[in-house]
Amino acid sequence: MIPMIFSPEVAKARSDGSAIVALESTIITHGMPWPQNVETARRVEAEIRAHGATPATIAVIDGQLHIGLTGLQLDALGQAKGVAKLSRADLAVCLAQGGTGATTVAATMISAHLAGIAIFATGGIGGVHRGAETSFDISADLHELAQTPVTVVAAGAKAILDLNKTYEVIETLGVPVITYGQDSIPAFWSATSDIKAFQRMDSATQIAAAHRMRAALGLAGGQLVTNPIPAADQIPAAILAPFIAQALEEAQVQRISAKAVTPFLLNRLYELTEGRSLTANIALVLNNARLAAAIACALVAL
Image (cartoon, rainbow, N blue to C red; front, side, top):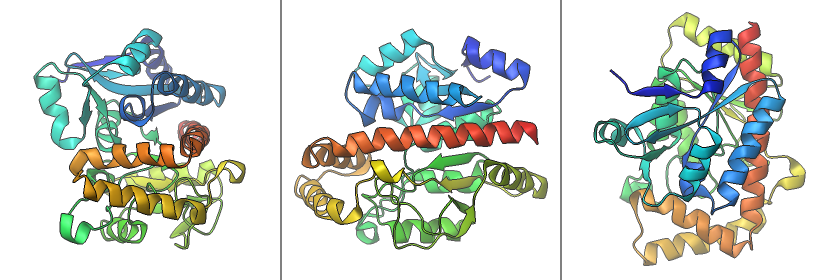
């Protein structure tokens, strides 16, 4: 039996049959410093509520899978030390051993599906790391998208990755990539990229209908909705490129690998951009929360 606990707010939404949006917890434990991590988590949850849905931040606490966190739990998680970063490979072990861990995109998708939640808002997905032809460093997020039927709203794959290879792998795995409201795929902190959108949709209802049709067809996996950061909040790719190159070189020199790579790169970009990357990150997460709430509400309406 899965040790799953629903917060009172999420339990009520489930009982009412109302819209719910899943949220990951690694953005709290590994993505931002205290207290901005919890402040941002609260703002994201508030944004989802303001747009008619219920937020369900997911985490493992003392061997129990929590679907939705209380205010006290958010505060505790935001200040906790040594919290595990959970993906598909780690989730069961953490639960079985009574551990505490924050869920990545992959683990959040698994947990959301177990809880009957179809829509998930995050910042950006993982993907194929630069130099993967020698390191074979490819995020589990991509295979999760191919097998777990959850629609993920993100600002694209993180710009520190090899974006072209990432979307080639996603296409090979048969995952639909839907770009919201424009003809190029966004590049996380940047609203546009040179990668043409695979499929464009301009309304939450269209995206919800596509989610439902995949289920009707019996197709495995979910959908990736790439939602561009608002233009006023973006950092142009030309400005970011030299900073990303410097951070990647430093990671290589310091022999940082595996799960430590992404947190290191994000932290260095925060330093190199004098905080602009974090400001943009917060803006894009809030923007994704708004769209995810609209999609969740449209799915209920359908």
